[in-house]
Image (tube, rainbow, N blue to C red; front, side):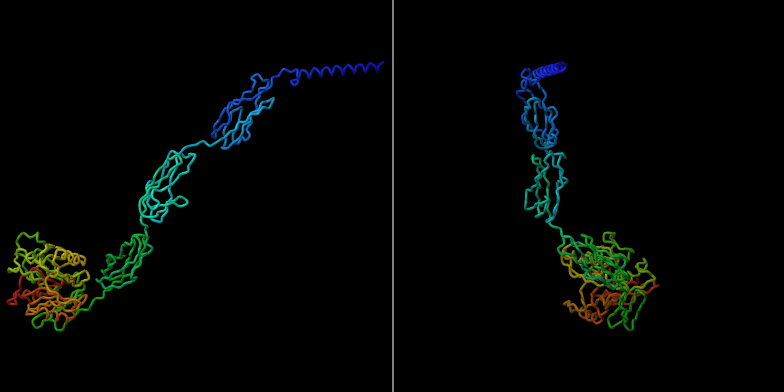
Length: 576
C-alpha cells in the first residue's frame, strides 16, 4: 500500500516539472511565441574617411528598423595605433590606414569604415638665407646656410639651382663650387614655389705666400756704405708678394726697400716680412769703421790734424794741392753761401728785400762770417775754397739775382734746404754735383729739359744730398779721364775724391787746361773729379782750431792774382 503511494507522488512531481518546462520555453526570446523585433540593417553616416593626425570625426550609426528590440552597437578599430574610435568618435593618431568595424548586438550586422590618417600639411612661408651675397675663389666650396620657416613646415625639401653653371656648380652635399670668375645667382625654391636668391661673386684664386728668403743671411758694411738685399717671395706666383722691411736698430743700420746703409758702428738685424702670411727672413748686418788712412803728402806748407779732420796744403809750380781727410765726408763737406754768410742763416730769394749788393763775399769773408755766427766753431778747424763761378761784380752775373741770371742754377740746396727749384724750360744745362749719404762725390749730368731736371731732382733727393754746386765739366769718372773736347787753357778750381775719406782740392793760379787737370787728378789716384770754377776766382783759405779768422793761402781775381774776387758760393771742409 505504501509502495503504490510513493509511485503516485513521483509521477505527480514529474508531471508538474514537465508542465513548467513547457511554459518556460514558450515565454523565452527564442520562442516562436516571443514578440521581439530584430535588426534588419545598419546605416553609417560616413563612408571611407581621411583624417589628419590629431583630427577627430564623429560617425553615427542607425539600426534599421528604428523599433528594433536590440539597440546596442559595437565600435572597434582594427589598428588603434593609426586611429581610435569611441562611440563613433574617430581620432587620427598616426599616419597610415586602418578599418573601423561597426557591429549590431543581436544579429551581428557589420559595417566597415576605411580610415586614412595623414600628417597635416604645413606649407613653407619663407626661405631665410644667412648671407644674401657670397664671395668665393675659383676652386673653393661654400656651404649654403639657410632656414625654412615655419620650423614645422611639412615639406622642407628645397631645390637649389644657379643661373650660370659656368660660374658655379654644386657638390653632392649641395655646396657651392667656384668654377670660373664672374657673378651669378643661386635660387632656392620650396615645393610650393616659395623662393629666395643669393648673389655669388667668384674671384680669381688667391695663391698664398708660403715663405720668403733673402739673398744674404749676413753682411758686413763699412760705415756710411750701402748694399741691397733682395727678397724672394715663395711661390713666385703668389697673389700678394709685397713685403715690408725693418731694422732692429735704425741708429746702426737703416733700410729702405731693401737698400741698407751703415749709420753707426755696431750690429743690427734686417727683417723682411711678407704682408700675406706674415712670413719672415733675416740678415745680420755688421757695420765696421773701416776708414781709409789719410794721404799725407811730403813737405806741406800748411797742415792740420785732428781726429775727424786732417788737411795738408802743398805748393807746386803754378798750383796748390790740398789733401783733405775726413771722418764723415757726408756731414763735413759743406757749402759757403753768401746768403748764410751775410745773415747767419739760409735765405731764399723771396726773403731778400732788394739789397742784393750785400750778397757779395770773398771766400775769406764768407768763412769769417761763418765763424762770427758760430756756423764754423772757433774751436774747430776748416779749409775753404771757391766752388761755383757766380761772379757778381761784373755784367757776367749782375747782383740783381745771381741765381736767376746764372741760368744754369735751376736747383740750389744749402745745408739740406732747397732754396731754389726752378724747372722752367729753356735754362742752360750745366752739370750739378753733390755729396751723397755715403759721403761720395756724385755728378749729376746735363738736364736740358724740364722732364730731365725732374729726373735729376729725384736722384739728388733720393741720394740725400745736403748741398749742391754746379759748373762744368766732369774731369774724371771711375778713375778715367773724361774728354771735354776743350784744349784751351784757363785757371781752374777742381775737386777730386780718392776714396771714402780722402779728397784733394786743386787751386790753380796759372793756366791749366781740362786735359792737364784730368791727368793731374788721375796721377793722384782720384776716382772722380770735377771742375768747380773758371778764370780768376780761385781761392784757398785755411783755419785751425782756436782761431777766429780764416787765413788766406792764395786767391786771384784774374788780373793781379793776389786780390780776392767776390763770389757767392764756396765749399769748405769742416772739423766734426
